[in-house]
Amino acid sequence: MKALCWQGVNQLSVETVPDPEIRNEQDVILKVTATTTCGSDLHLIGGYIPAMQAGDVLGHEFLGEVVEVGSQVRKHKVGDRVVVCSFIGCGRCWYCAHDLWSLCDNSNTNPGLGSALFGYESGAVFGYSHVMGGFRGSHAEYVRVPFADYGAFGVPEGLDDDSALFASDAAPTGWMGADLGGVRPGDVVAVWGCGAVGQLAAKAAMLLGAERVFSIDRFGYRLRMTERHIGSETIDYSATDVGAELRERTGGRGPDVCVEAVGMEAHSAGVHHAYDQVKQQLRLETDRPDAVREAIYSCRKGGTVFILGVFAGVVDKFPLGAVMNKGLTVRGAQQHGQRYVPMLLDRMARGELPTGHLATHRLPLADGPRAYDLFKHKKDDCLRAVLHPGG
Ligand SMILES: NC(=O)c1ccc[n+]([C@@H]2O[C@H](COP(=O)([O-])OP(=O)(O)OC[C@H]3O[C@@H](n4cnc5c(N)ncnc54)[C@H](O)[C@@H]3O)[C@@H](O)[C@H]2O)c1
Ligand SMILES: [Zn+2]
Ligand SMILES: [Zn+2]
Image: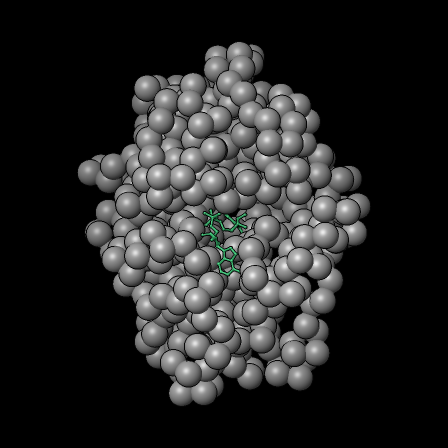
C-alpha cells in the first residue's frame, strides 16, 4: 500500500510499504478515508521529537471503514465507519480504568525510551516516534488499530467525514484543556493558539459555561475564522501586549483559566524568543515555551494554566516564582480522548461543536508532502490539510 513517510528532518515522501495485518485478536484493520495533518506533526517534521526513524509512517487523526476484525473485537464489524482516538489505550490497566487513557501502561511497546525521558513512559500514539510506541500512522491506505473496542468509535449517521475526523484528536484535546483546566460557568478563559486545538478548546470553554473567552494568535485568517466559527473574542499578539490587554478586558483581574495550545515551537517577538531559538538550535533546551510563560504571567492569582501544546523535554526561564507566588495550578496532558469522543460526536451531530470549517484543504494521499507544505507554512490560509487516501 501507499503511505506518507518521514524520511528525515523536513523530508517527507509517499512510499510503498507492507500492508498492515491483524497481529492481535483485539485489532481491526481500517481502510483510511480521511486523515489530517496536526500541529504535533510539525514538531516531528522539524526534528524536535526524538526517536524518529526514516520510513516511519505519519498520521494520528483519522477516520475510516473497518475491513477486517480480530477474533476478540466485540463492538465493530466489517463495513463500520469509525473515528479512532490518536492515543492507544488497552482499556484494562490502572490508568485506562481511571480514564487517564494517554497514560496507558500497556500500549507503548517501547517503554524504555519514555521512562528515560520522562521518568515513566506515556501511552502509545499512532505515527508519533518510537518514544510513543513506533506505531504506523494513518497517512496510508490502511492502518492497524490495536485495542479497537476502546479506541474506535462509530460515527453517527449524517455526520460527514471531514467533521467527524476531528473527534480523533483536536476536539478531545481542546475539550480536555477546558475540562481538566476546571472551567466553570461564569469564568473568563484565554486560549493561546488559533489552530484546530486552540479553536476547539475555546469552543469547549464556551460550552462549559465560560462567560468570556479570548483566543490569541497572530495570523489574521486564523483569528477571523475563530471569531466566525467559534465566537470567541480575539487578540492579535503581534499587535498588542497580551497580558496588558487581558488585564484591561477583564477589569484588571486576568483570566481564571488559561489554556496553552501552541507547543514547543512557539513564536514571539520578545527577547526570550531569540534566546530560546538559539538554545533550541544548539539542543541546550528542547522546547520554546513562549506561550506557556505568557499564560503564567497573564493568569489571575489562584487561576489554572493548562498546557495542551506538546513539549518534549526541558525549558529555560520557566517562571516558577509566578506559579508559586500567584498560587497557580499548572497542569498538562496528552489527550485522554476515549473519555470524551462519544460525547463529542453527539455534540457534533447536534450542531453544537463546529469542526467542518477546520478542513480548509482536501488532497489525495499522493499530495502528502504538499499538504504539509501548505499547513506548515500557512499557505493559502491553510488551517488543516486533510488527506483522502481513497481519492
Ligand atoms: N495534548 C495533546 O494531546 C495534543 C493533541 C493534539 C495537538 N497537540 C498540540 O497542540 C498544539 C496545537 O496544535 P494545532 O494542531 O492547533 O497546531 P497549529 O500549528 O495549527 O496551531 C498553533 C497555533 O499557535 C500559534 N502561535 C504560535 N506562537 C504563539 C504565541 N506565542 N501565542 C499565541 N499563539 C501562538 C500559531 O500561529 C498557530 O496558529 C501543538 O503543540 C500540538 O502538538 C496536543
Ligand atoms: Zn494531533
Ligand atoms: Zn491501559
